[in-house]
Image 1 (cartoon, rainbow, N blue to C red):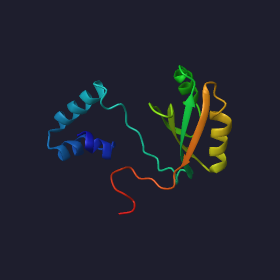
Image 2 (spheres, rainbow, N blue to C red):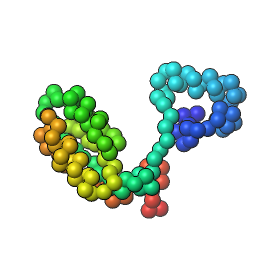
Image 3 (cartoon, rainbow, N blue to C red):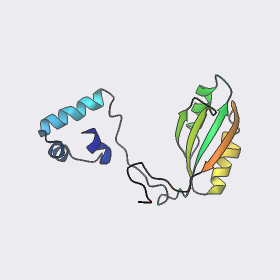
Length: 140
């Protein structure tokens, strides 16, 4: 059921029931239970970055001062074009996925916005040349 909803969150309960070989009432009850249990946290549209005008993608790692994660993450959550942020263990403390309209916007984001956040010691940026979601390589 989760696999079907992950592929298409817009499935009707009837279609979901047919694909998972359960009754409609059972499918409805299971989806409601998955939502109530916090397994399903929401339904949203997946946006293709390039058709949406976000032509530049990059991963930006941050090294931050110890014990500043809460403040830094609160500020990062308000920075436009940051799609995802993760707290890491290892050489870097934070990794952010950025999708910006162009290199100039990426540069502004990193050099002016992120590096000015109190607690950020340094950043490192990796441009994304090509990406895929893990289900199939674009080079197959």
